[in-house]
Image (spheres, chains in turn red, orange):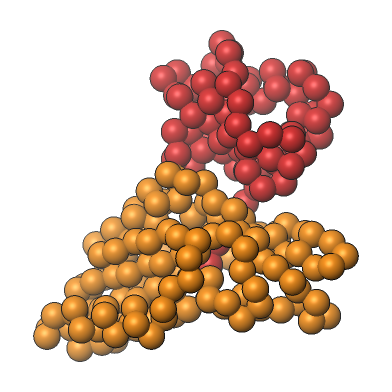
Length: 81
Length: 148
């Protein structure tokens, strides 16, 4: 699946988008896999209360299942307007 | 209903006039709001950089506008939101609502503002000569959604 990062999440991880091969069942499982990869992911995902997730461009939850999902995005709380 | 996400500036007066002229004769009330880049307290803001999530942004704004059209008796609604690099004083976004009566027009405009502040995927960064800081979301903005 494609994993996208925005705002300071993108800056901490150092890229806007990557292709991830995973068998993660939920968003939380995917986050655990990413955190185990490298220090920069560990830093970006250290405080989940400061993060939001969207699945296929719809705001979602960390315990949501990933079955059939093609695009996951992680970002801080939004500041539009 | 019209939703625009763009990096180019928009003509606020022109948009309001076009919107008002297109409103039906049964719409007796038109409310508009525009958000402007505010300088920092120190007066040293050079640029406000607005990042967004292409694709999701448009979908989220359309969903919010459709919800407003359903909840209030609106003749029409308009949302324009910019992204990219803006300077203090630049207009970031605008909403306009047309309704038979002003209560619907005002309430729907506030609803649009409250939702697009914390449910549309935009992120603001304030850049000065010394530093660049992401603007943090405010609890008050999240709380504002509860009244709807």
